[in-house]
Length: 76
Image (cartoon, rainbow, N blue to C red; front, side, top):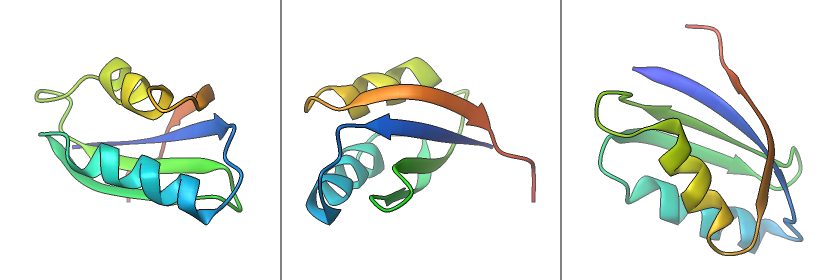
């Protein structure tokens, strides 16, 4: 499993964060997604054998948001 933090531009409210979270959570291979409007980021735990990071970027950007950075979170 891998956790990646995606920094996101274009969120205007908690509803935006909920939209992104619901899109990511539906993707096979995603174990958990937490999207924060206040922090303007999505933290996603996923199986890199099942879903590629690029696919997650596509899901976030599909409704019109923009991923401006991403980083691998340290293992916990």
